[in-house]
Length: 303
Image (tube, rainbow, N blue to C red):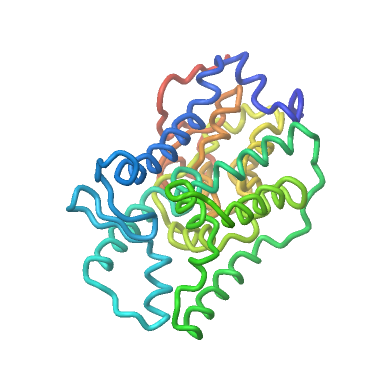
């Protein structure tokens, strides 16, 4: 097992250096904060690069982007769909189909900053009690939000969606919305590991369906080198997705992590001191293959 479950990645820091052991985490934070900064630039500094919010926006007055989940709720509730909004939803859907639907959760969603903090603090405090929650609950929750939209004729979920609350709060001030964000943090910290994102969030459930056949995948390309330290499981927001690729379970994916619940966060790549994991494509890494699909940056391979 790892040197300390409270400090996964310690061996990777020694083997690869601190920066290489946090490369994908740093890039994710740049992406998350960068997306938020684009929305803040207008109301805060008068630089209207992006107008709108994470549900629907217009970039540089040209590029429409629409959250397909929000658009679906709007359509089900009986609202007319503007052509621009529909085009924006298609653009977003195609993008996440290619890169992985739940990449949204790891690379864009602002609530991920809160849940990652809760997961980090949970490890530090040694709160390792496993959750008994069913991960399929988020799909039931997703269905419920669509039923509510259909029966009320409103996009009711967006009024209480922590993602929307977080986005509005950063720009306009939180107010009572801070209670919802605090609730997500405390739920993840005290009740269930990755409880909100991994078990309940309907946004993540929707994007997992959207990216079921996505092209970009993490591969356990050098799985024969694995020493079972467990660090990848410790940091992964969806640890159940790792085993089929790492241990060669017969899911037809070879070294690729094919689960739609993988967030493509890259933390397993970061914390592995033996460079077992790589980013690749869905078609690279045939069953039984141990050849690196492709790699970003230096390999820092250990002999």
